Length: 279
Image (tube, rainbow, N blue to C red; front, side):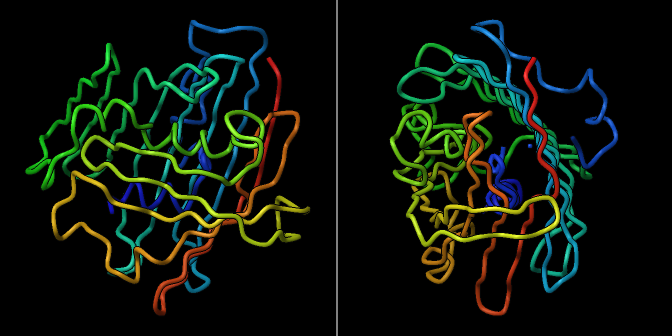
């Protein structure tokens, strides 16, 4: 599983994602996402700040800002991890997504991801006429065995759109939150996010206090994976547990707490601040 996908799954915020910033640039107004041109009515702006912990040590910052109208969306996510040995590598990434919304779901228009490491890899995906134009610089050594098909690439959400899709369910697309499966394509790997309801939970933590809906999210690889990238049997059977809080003013179920436990490893992501405004 890629660092970005692993981090966004844990920091969903959409999800989870969904996602002001680990770097100073994202905090400036000119870098915040604007509503796409195809808009109706007012824009709802949502900002979520998250912190992640492993064994009680803070190892992750994730900050998200998104703009939603009736028929369009835009998002920016900034993710930073300080690293913890072999469990979580140190990295810093920002990503943006724009798209439209209809009765069937989200339709990404453009997704950009910039890694701020030594390779400085940049990924751009542009969606048009049943296909996705992909630019990856520097190039990846492989597109997986077998690679994702043209249809799998186009018919899937990018990682940020998938998290927003998850948060909108219960208000749009489905009658209830945390139901169904979301196909995702991250420029190489195609996988599914399969959701199952678990017990509700009252959460009291810095930044949030209230009732939540529990959701187990399973990561199901489909194509575009090299053998060494495939999850182990334990990883495949272990979900990320996400607790969603209902925000009627935004039309979203926003993740306020996420956890992932495997073997002796346990990561916990907590939402520290949520801001919702209308423009």
